[in-house]
Image 1 (tube, helix red, strand yellow):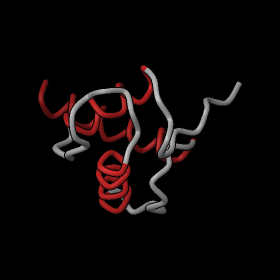
Image 2 (image 1 turned 180 degrees about the vertical axis):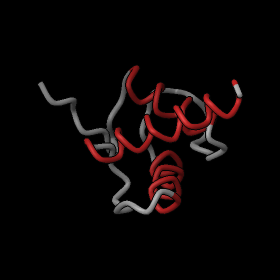
Image 3 (image 1 turned 90 degrees about the horizontal axis):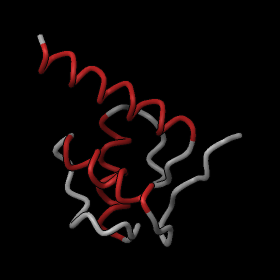
Amino acid sequence: MAEETLERGSEGPEVADLQEKLIGLRFKPGEVDGKFGVITESALKMFQVSVKIEADGMVGERTRERLAEVLEQQNETAAG
């Protein structure tokens, strides 16, 4: 089953997880409150631009893949 697309107006633990990941990657989504607002959308778009994917401000399959790849690379760098 495909995961739900996250976008402005989305709320819940998945959004809080996204916010924490963006903070870990030095993007600034605002406070971790589980609410996908304008600041989270802006931070997400900056992430999307940085990894050269469409900066639509939504978390779909491609954005999830790139987030996972970048976080994995960051963890490998930190561990190595």
